Image (cartoon, rainbow, N blue to C red):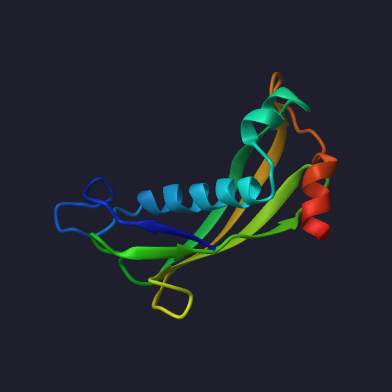
Length: 131
């Protein structure tokens, strides 16, 4: 679980989070999921030379987030093949006991950092998925 606050820059003129900005919150939660397991995306890009790219996204917007809201963002990964991960993610107002604002499924591909061709998930990621 990762928390974020909604700032003015995240909203439209009415103080409601602009729909595309929810993707930023989801992205940050996936990055924090990796970081909380001691995995740096910068380090992965150097050795073993991989990056992740979103290849599919499905989102259901249920309620609007507003200026100054505190958001709780979940990130539940599962291996989706040899070179991809699927993340089930949700955003709530305040906490997971709060109002559900968005549900999403995000699929990311593991790519070679130089060629951008699919590359198998590294052992460190597979270990974390099995933990």
